[in-house]
Image 1 (cartoon, one colour):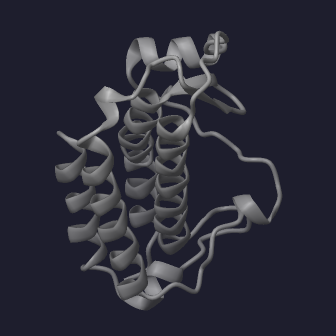
Image 2 (image 1 turned 30 degrees about the vertical axis):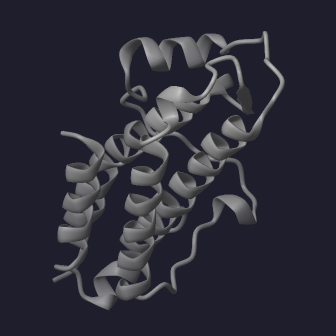
Length: 166
């Protein structure tokens, strides 16, 4: 499944949730579906900003990925584990976004992906930006990370859907 089909499937599923379902928190420390969608949108836009930053660079970066980054890109996916982000406002997605706002955010991600896709392979692969966990990534790697991240959250989406109260 390419990134367009993947994000369109998220959008299609989003249409089926009520606002109460989107904001439902099953237990303390567990995100709602709305928070997961907000996290996906914000993370994707951040990763795409890194693609743009790589494109505007004029200095090659000799450093590469960390061992975790090498593993991630060798298998082409996040490991099938739950990842607990550090506490902080940047890791606490909004639970008040409307369905329309979330859909608009996913549309923006698709638009930005399409814009970046046109040029990502022309960007010098040695123009890199550091990821805290994965090391220095090229524009192509940042771009590919968006799809990997959306695929990683599919399991969480299913779990959250199963906890919904009808």
